[in-house]
Image (cartoon, rainbow, N blue to C red; front, side, top):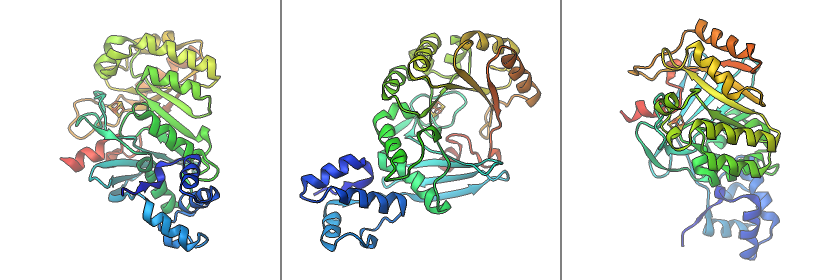
Length: 343
Ligand code: SF4
């Protein structure tokens, strides 16, 4: 009989599962506390569980593992973790430390990515598979064990398109958010998408407080399709329309991400077009400094130009922040460390 992977269950599902096997429902809550609060992953160490119940767990369930393949630390403190999954596939997580002592973990949602954005290493080797709920959670659990506390923020900005693995990502967020598990506030969790329109509509129906960030990177279709082929399927104007609807119905703000790449999308003319495209709504822009992969022909925009770009947007009353990419010396941008490892 194939053992079931406990970390793929929400609390309600696990209660149901135990009840159907003649066990008490509250055992699921006890188990959640052991795994996600105390970070204990060996049934025999869960000392308040009866021996017979531990035997039942051994016989029917298991706790999936994640292995650390490589760890690198940047001069700026950013840490990158290359993880090996049970089937040998490799994913990454990045830990970013803010000056105010906040810790953000950037996690992966897929092995590879099918969207092949021009500036991103994750898409270069194509898509392999979706991550399981347990594989998503294991990235956070690993860091929790190391820090002896939760990271303050979780962002789905690692390898893969999270809304392309919708069900598993949503389930993982439920568990991250659950008071009986990680208890990380929904507002501390960000889903970052390249703009999968049907999934954004679906997310809107969830009506919860998770943050949504949409990668724009260009204010017109031709340029966006060049940078992000997904734009051919979900064009810019349709995407903006859906985002407007999302903001109206959820009363939540959306952050648009815009990576500035020298000579490609960083002219002030594009700043004007961007302001026109998104102005008048509860949208925010995050300008990101580009972190080129080794050998990349694309270059980062100078900081003076980034500041001028920002001023243009601010002058049009668009809240705009600049996010300086961290960990440039350790290939911390999405997919870079994995690409180096696979070379
Ligand atoms: S930026 Fe995101 S959607 Fe685009 S290839 Fe990279 S992981 Fe995929």
